[in-house]
Amino acid sequence: MFKGIAASRGIGIGSVCVIKEHDLNYEAKKVEDTAAEKDRFNNAIEKFKKETSEMAEDIRKRIGPKEAEILEGHLVMISDPSMSGEMAKMIDSGQCAESAVEAVCDMFINMFSKMDDDMMRQRASDISDVKVSILKILLGIEDVNISQVAPGTVLVAKDLTPSMTSQINKENVVGIITEVGGKTSHSAILARALEIPAVLSVPDATELVKDKETAIVDGTEGVVFVNPDGDVLSQYIRKREDYIRKQSELKGFYGKETKTKDGTSLELFCNIGTPKDAKKAIECDGEGIGLFRSEFLFMDNNHMPTEDEQFAAYKEVAETMGGKPVIIRTLDIGGDKDIPYLNMKKEENPFLGYRAVRYCLGNKDSYMIQLRAIVRASAFGKIKIMIPLVTCVDELREVKALVEEIKKDFDANNIAYDKDIEVGCMIETPAASLIADILAKEADFFSIGTNDLTQYTMSVDRGNSDVAYLYSTFQPSVLRSIKNIIECGNKAGIPVGMCGEAAADPLMIPLLISFGLTEFSVNPVLVLTARCIISKWSKEEADELTNKIMALDNEKDIVKALKEASKD
Image (cartoon, rainbow, N blue to C red):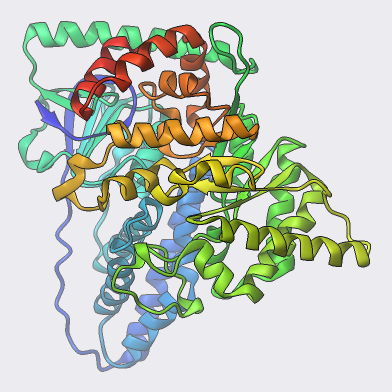
């Protein structure tokens, strides 16, 4: 048995096909005829764009527009002057096209891979995919045609890139195993969209697993069995049948209210990063947007977005959601998120430094542009403002004062906006948790960010594998922190949501019901799963389980007890 990351739920059983990596070695020779070399480079770029556009269109038709955006993002990258222009300059200086492509791509890969945010690290993977694709074109290497694999195939690769995934025929591929990648990688996103079970980050998978061997891919638990014995195979055939039955059951929750077993209504929102993601939230039956990460408007630009540019994005989301709540998190940069044109100074410990609301309040001119855009957009839907990384009540009060200043200006100039626009805060630091009762008197709502709350509470860098064993929302300290935040919000009569990954965890959901969480915000594809799990628990049952859990003193026993009680 091999262990990895459970990236796409389900059970796949089939025959292995190992996708070996090509040898991309080349001679980094000095070029005399730079004009001819640049022509060779430009031809390769044009071929890359043509092939990528065709693959994106194919994905759009077979899978969906959201998944096609992954490859469209590759086109945007290679069209960026800071990338292709720099490559051309290196060729002008006498370097061969291969060296120029590799050097520039590696520079960006190194920059993004050091960031702790999963979505930022994914950009490093994207650029690596672009680099490999262009090098193959320059070296005349043809890719393996994945679309021709036999029915019942389990694909094994070092990394299943978007360009490779675009060739997958879901009727033939029953499972995916890779050596790298995580839950937010594009391999995982595309596997989930195709509904193919996937286990990623299985060390040395391409060497340990052989062609034609029988493999079981458990994308729910994150385990792989190769050449299983009869008992294991029989057990997983039953598990696969049970999973298929449960997936069929989920379809019955589309269009239904989100209610507990005893009829308590809750709200089930979605987390998004771009205006286009709002359409996916609607498709997946989300009841609103619990987190719109506005920083991607800034990261996908080579300049500070203007008020009108930001307004257009926020307005688009509000209109797409048709009056359903849209919570926009103001710019959350710093830490692992760097935006070159902002020229942020380097810090020894950026996660404890000048980031998020601290940066925004220190740069009020640019912050006011964003706040004005959000308030303007509130005329087109139920928009709310959320402040990230709050650690003291003064930060919340200062942002609210800026919003009031904008309101007065809009009133004086007859600019429409929602007079009752709400301002809340993200509770993601131990400091905010400890003063949740104070913040609740000032905030219109809370949203718990479990990713950072867990990291800061446990003093763990979640990107550091040596201490990853401590990074768990089920640590007693984290659970007590979450319980306190929710209780303080409920006592003050304000809504309390959760937009971290824990909101969709079947093991966490009964605890959150018991604690009194009123809003769950999840990845759009998990809406129906979360709604189903919520429907299986009554408040009384959740309270009974929670009393047992909160009496336990360690994470291991807590997870074990929750798994035994699970209704997933």
